[in-house]
Length: 279
Image (tube, rainbow, N blue to C red; front, side):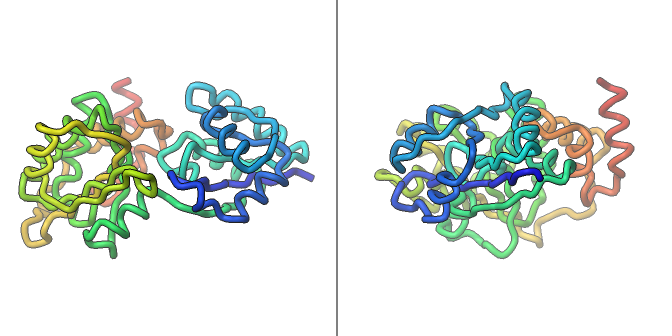
């Protein structure tokens, strides 16, 4: 009988947020699959645990097959990211997808997630939202992704590192306008936690004079439905560019084509075909 793949959430900053079930799952697991074994080792030391670990970081995803084989052989695996819920904007999603395909039992052990924590505290509308994670780094793909989101009326959530924050704020202001409301959530649950609701223009001006510090979650208000242009449907080229951006972020081509196609009028097949034909 095969073992179980546990998806174990870890604190996003404050170790006092550690749920008892998380510690118990780590203790019961036969081994741990970690995004970064060095980060997880500090967590295990805090819990007083010693467990064999393997890395599933995106540059070592060939370990994914070995992880799945160990589970199929009967071992229980606790998969965790550096912080928060694993497999959200995280390469562990590939292992989970393959686990389902192979009939392996997948059990979530939930806890804090930076995107939902930021949304709840942002002061932005929470009924409908879109999680974008990190924007693509290449300029062409980034521009295409932002253009694709320009008329999005749901609240948008982005992750950003401090050294890229200024560029990202500039790009958001250029795309959505300086008057768009944004909440900058910094170092959530940590000592220097800060949540500021402002506008994109004010955020750009502030960080021209102040250095960004810590990890950020940006919660951006959606477009006013009255101002959105529902008839301005994206072109096939724009949808393909959006799919390529998703692929660059680690999503398999077929899944990227399916997500980019949603609500555009183009089929997953024609987007995927164009992606493949253009290399």
